[in-house]
Amino acid sequence: MCFSATASFGSGVVLAIIGVVTLKITRKPSHLVFAFIPILFAVQQISEGFVWLTLQNEDYARWQSFPTYVFMVFAHIVWPIWISLSAWLLEKGTTRKKILSVLFALAILLSGSEVYYMLQTTITAEISGHHVKYVFEYPKVYVIITDILYGLVTILPCFVSSVKKMWLLGSCFTASLIFSAWFYQAHLLSVWCFFAAILSIIIYLIIDGHQKSVEPAV
Image (tube, rainbow, N blue to C red; front, top):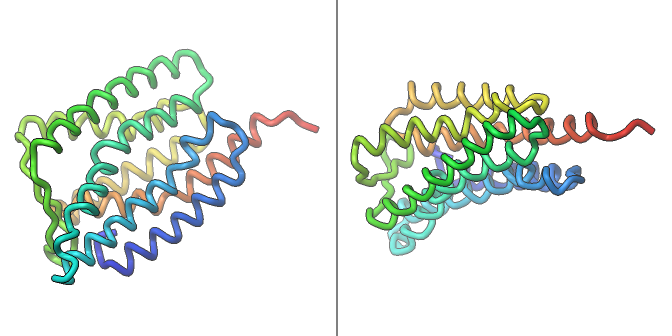
């Protein structure tokens, strides 16, 4: 979370609880990747909590690099692949699954390019305007292209999917992105990840509803 270490750790704990509850109701292997999203969000939020600690305490400053890169790996590499893959695994319709396969392939290419640039660039974090700002230098053209691809592979799968309430998740992701970009442009990465993490409760509802819809009547 972008507002304080306490808030980041607190949201991480809440997300972990939501994740455990979601995993407990998950009975199909194909649902596990999607159901695991709240747990991953929890790890990401906790990692940013440690970023806050390293920024606010000189004694911990030498450890700043590790939690910073953990957060960035989730934001730039894990989410494109994880979200598109989870939507693909949930989908049963042949046509929609083919579209999701293309999006998943794009996600792999995107994440692969992010790995390359992350290895070539030094990433640091700083407190700016009561928020965490991640500082890194990527080519401007690359940033524009990858921003578009990122939106395609993380948001579009929710609208392509035929799973009930997935459109709601996509709508909430989109709304949170627009809100974060409008009010927190300089800290978009950190703030959007926080709002996206809050929406993990919708994942629980999707898993619960989807499993009930496919279970045979007794």
